[in-house]
Image (cartoon, rainbow, N blue to C red; front, side):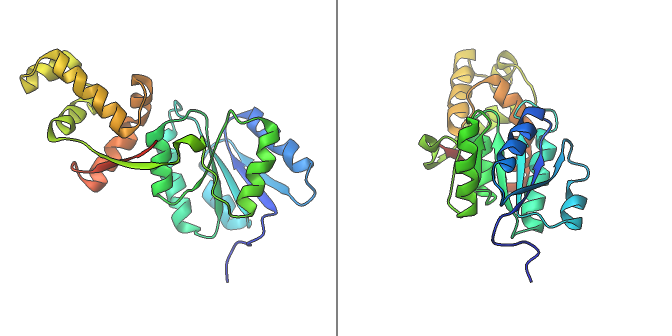
Length: 222
């Protein structure tokens, strides 16, 4: 027997953003068929709370530049595996193609933007209830496999270690402009727009490379 209902009535939220919690509460208050069971700002007690009380929809916020991003990603993957019948709506505050690609690869297809107006939340919740696929920023919903060349993989290994461009050029015996060009290509292929996003994704990139190997094709949402 499934631990969760097909019909969504009970919601829970994992987010450190108070405004998000208030907005969700307002949405629930306007719909008599929905109930917000609990809100957790940290991840420590989420698994225990799901075990104790049945939840139909877990809304899970990811803040790209938050120090706990890697841990929250790991927890999301674990929860999706442990509770396959639980619907999970992921909220992202910054569109990072690499991040959304990881979520979709793990089977987490309900992803929306934190910047979405409150009036759009009802549409998103209803889409989840109907099991419709909703992806943050629909114009990016095309998947494209972008393999990295051996030289790009080498540069990427240096970059994720925090090595500077000029030092990478010396190690690889290439000119600085060549390494800079490799970096630009790498960022485009894996779906990361700038250095701040790269730093935020660093642990996730390392984890994926360790898990699937250096010859991986990075799945990009475009």
